[in-house]
Image (tube, rainbow, N blue to C red; front, side, top):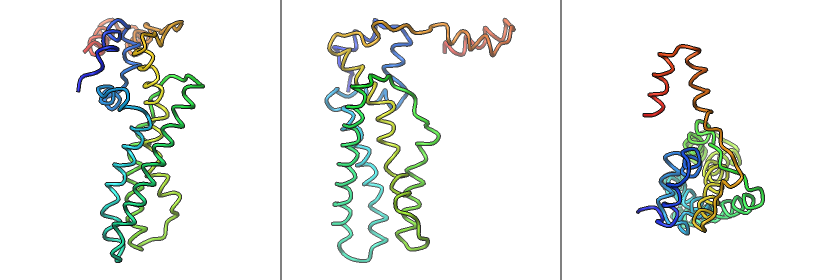
Length: 203
């Protein structure tokens, strides 16, 4: 699905630093292809809850001998999705007041957390080891809402401003020499190495 034509044209008029702030990394760029009403932070957070619920099917199925495992799974999945949706809405409310710009979430910490949490949940449900449920659910549920709060909710607010024909960067100045200064520090005075670093950054 193509990005909204209304803000896409305005995006092209911005500088590279502003475009990078609005579009973010690969995950955020996927969400920017959706309509703004569909990519609402609460929807994205609830979608994460849905993915977590799908991953819980097997632990619930094989760890519970009763025939009510499906009912329990549906009930808990609904709770997870609603909880994530409310957290996404809360993040958007906070961002509207603080007007904070998006920051890159600690991906090396957040991304493995659901897998670790699901592994611990499976171990706990099978009775192999008693683990605190609060720790397990924290590992499972935190990454999605945390990504939304740090990265997507602020970015979605900026995209809505751009959609409303407002410049979200008005009055702000970006340091366009930042990358150049970083390259000069890496090269440490070596002109040939500096040219190679600049060429790599352009690619």
